[in-house]
Image 1 (cartoon, rainbow, N blue to C red):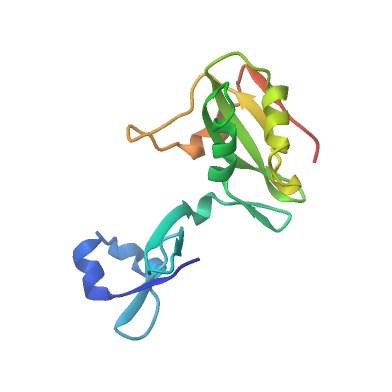
Image 2: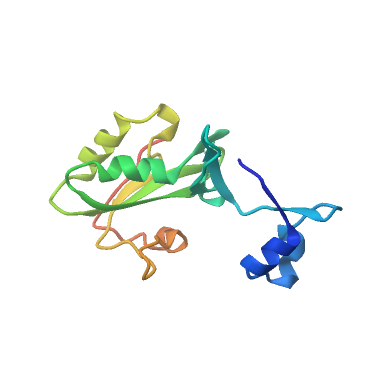
Amino acid sequence: MVLFSLCWFLIAFSVPIDFIKVDSYFSGKSPRFQIFSGDIAYYDDDGHYFVVDRLKDIIKYKGYQISPTYLESILLSHEAVLEAAVVGVPADVFGEVPKAYVVLKSHAEATEIQKYINERVSPYKKLRGGLEIVDEIPKLPSGKILRRKLPQTDNGKENLKINY
């Protein structure tokens, strides 16, 4: 994780701050503070920073960290998949397991899509929470997936679960 350190007065003019939650965003005892944004980023040799994911969206399975965005990109590469969203669902012993919600653009079986992704990922990244074919994936007007609403929609056309 990349940690950005900025002077507090630069932040005050560029980011709206909820002063009730200031303690959760800032730490330190000097005029330099640190912001914990919850973003995962990297930087290249030229010093350019790239924000690639959100830390809280990461699925933790048996100590491994799984990026839902990575699994979604593989699902979207399947010719029958129009939209895809992956969330972590609670598992008794393992923390969370990935579950996929898929909107199809052409007919395909859940088992076919499951086989497709399982051939392309490491064993710990398999969709152990299942794969559910749905009519739509809830999104904001901006197109961002509303992941918190996905686990509540357990009424898909086809729901495939596999064992741990």
